Image 1 (cartoon, helix red, strand yellow):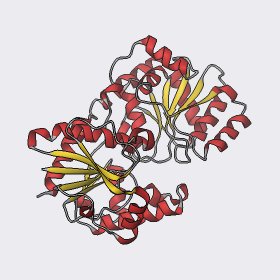
Image 2 (tube, helix red, strand yellow):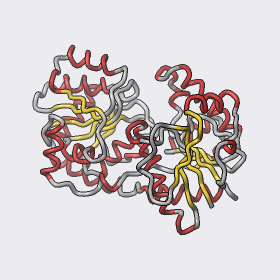
Image 3 (cartoon, rainbow, N blue to C red):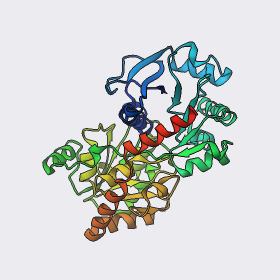
Image 4 (cartoon, rainbow, N blue to C red):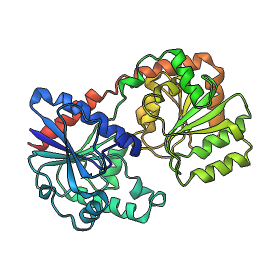
Length: 376
């Protein structure tokens, strides 16, 4: 059987799509391995981009559509045409790895829905993104193919808000790469932290692009509430339009050098940064899944996260959960983790045990089962 994994921004997905990019890369690699025993072969497909993907595993081909991403998505969103078969052939099933646009095809198809944020929170996005997301959900709801949701939280929303029959939805959690579980030499941790201007054991780490949804203002105000010059905040993620407002807040609160922006942090450094942090702080007001808390747990780093979206479902009882905007509660949680070595040890052990259940092999096996079911 030949499966086509359809994606956008697929040449360098880890740099351009964060969590969804991680899903694209890790699932492709794991499916390529899991499908061998059953005679499945997968290719990656997507709109034309500059360059070519260098991350593909052996045996996975790449088949670019000879049209750019924007015109293709507009055509599909507005007209539900042309069919994918006009551009690509020789496949038995297509799996759309992101639900951002409808995918017209006459072959069996599967779609993964990571979140409904452009539908639920249109104020966070441009009008065009919200319109396309609503159109996509309408097309998905009218279809009959299987739908994969990253979490039960998203599955419930896809059914109640998106109008997709719950009988079509399968919940398949994302997972953690082995690089977050592997031991790291203390000298390596020290070198990576030093390169980012922080000391091991003396900083909080927030991972995610600077945006309204990530709610980093809460952690900045928590830093001011703590009034502890011995602890810093390091933000690992791309800066966006919200960064200027956040930096103005930092200056207003007199935090100066206590908050640092690291920008995008690659895989070769992120696990070491997590190991060096007092805790990962994740105040996001909504998440379809929430990979950074799970990755930190796999690394043995205590996690303090918002009780919002899918986060409680993913972290279970292995993290401290806090109301997203309660500055006093965030300050109290940070103080407890910083000052109580027994609590840190308990959270570290519980996090590792919890994260051990989330493997990309398991995600791929369950996804392959959905592919088989789609073919009947």
